Image (cartoon, rainbow, N blue to C red; front, side, top):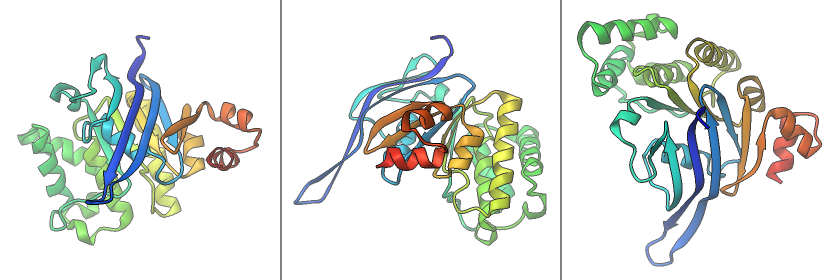
Length: 250
């Protein structure tokens, strides 16, 4: 059990909407998972399955209604302590930064929020800009960037604090195939170099197949299947992960 970095037990989350006629939507219904330290763990499922809700709960952005969460051995069910938060980060496939900030200014702003200043922060920013091949655009305003460069900025921002746990919520959605391929390659190289723990949600089966050591398939707020891609194909009696996805979704 010493290699378990995230333990999720029977997590439940219900959203209630409507002012007069209340409507309940069950986003998560008893989800339990154990994530091993240093693995790339995939979370697959159709739209509305509960994937993003689960990541937001792990990051402490919303609270679960029931269940228990342990991260790095600490109970984070009701609150994500600052010392754990500093060791985590999240990147969304639909990034949103202040439109008027340049790449350099955006990274400097978030770097200062993480408590970095002076020469240390400047060096960190320059290294990330170089890693993501953004040097040519470092002084370009966010609203003038291409979709691919916006996503590169989001990934760079998520690595400012050198997290031990990185949550990637559909990191290549909307990217051109060549940019998506380079992004996957960067994630692989990052993982190989740092042994960082990565939780990845995606709709792209090739991405999951290429990156993830284990995969959980979630639908209607419940884990329907869990294991390696080979196991998922075996239990669904299919030949590809895409076919397994369709079988599990139905």
